[in-house]
Structures are given as structure tokens and as C-alpha cells.
Image (cartoon, rainbow, N blue to C red):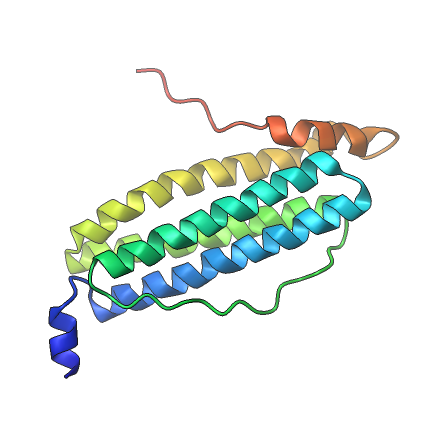
Length: 178
Ligand code: FEO
């Protein structure tokens, strides 16, 4: 029975499991960003709150993208249960440090799936995941820049207010000139 099920999908069991774990990771990221949005709102940092609301939406889109890929490849996507979402953070700066750590973990997880996909000769999955490789490059870059704002501007006086103003302005890295 198990073998017949596997004939219906182009995914190996290992890749399917890894992709489902990634679905869960993206769903969890989405919920954590939502929690960060609420925390920043409570502190009065409206731009940062808005930014994290958008991030929460983006992560949900990432989750759906992988979920659909599993389904389209004939696999069985697992609707994720998301638990252990922090409701409080150490500080305004701590939120951005956590966001960066989270993105670094996602990058590592994506890279692992790509490596296994190549090892198995699953070029379709490796190809599909290239979008995420690029996305993570951008997200890590911008998350790092946001943490740097705390060093560049400083938190004293109107510093945190200024940081909140700058948070939405951080864009992706410039494309290399051709
Ligand atoms: Fe979809 Fe930034 O993790």
C-alpha cells in the first residue's frame, strides 16, 4: 500500500517530510511575526508594528507556496499545528534580533532541503526551492540592516523613534551590475 502511494508522487519520503517541516516553520514564523507586530504596537512603534504585520502575511504566503507544491507533486501536505509562540519580547531591539535569528534558521532549513534534493536528483524540488534561497538572502540582509539601525542611530533620546521611522525603508540588496 505504502509503495502504491509513493508511485503517486514525484517526491521521496525524505523530501516530503522536510517540505512539510518547512510548511510548519513558515507557519510558525508567520505567527511569531504577528506576535511581534502586537508587541511593537503596544510599545507605540507603529511603523515597526505595520512592518511585522506585513512580514506575517509574507510568511503565510511562503507556507502556502510550499503546501501547494507538495500537493501538486502528488504528495500529502500536512496542515501545521503551531504552538509555543512567544507573546512577549525582551525589548524593542530584542524583537529585531529575534527576527534575524529566525530568518537565519529558515535559511539553514531551506539550504538543507536543497542539498538533499540535489543529492536525490530531485531537480524539480531543488528548482522550486531556488525562489526561497533568493528570498532568504533578501530577508536575512534586510533583517541584519534593521538590527544595525540600533547601532547606527542609537537608542537614546529620540533614537528609538527614529529607528521606528527607518524600519520600513530598508530595501533588498542592490542587484549586481551586469
Ligand atoms: Fe519564509 Fe523568511 O521565512
